[in-house]
Length: 132
Image (tube, rainbow, N blue to C red; front, side, top):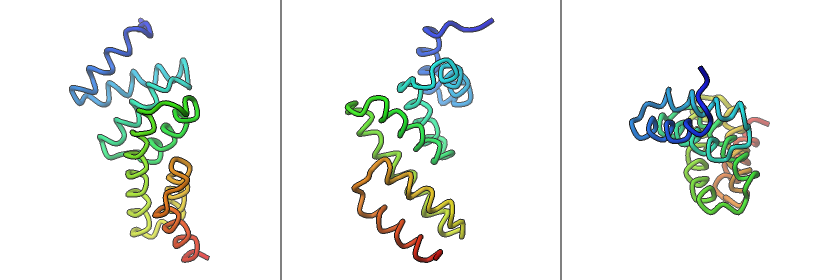
């Protein structure tokens, strides 16, 4: 039996508060299958990815889409800083592990979220120069 969409929102919030991230992700993915541009679901999924320290790039892509849906949302703008920091961290870890393409992809994604971030610009330029 399918759960009505209205029931998914409070339930996923309860799951997140209880740190039952697998259940919350399942609900969020159902919402995103129905409406791939649900900015609240995209933000919640990015929150889970950061909380579980997994899928930083997907968190970045979710945040990028949410920001495109509503570029004026101040809460999304503030949360995007946390996502940018996580993507930067992922890029640094990929660079240290000699996964150059992953590092470059992470730095590029970070710059899509924060185009004026001088640190990310330097990291991307350095990574590109080192690979060339």
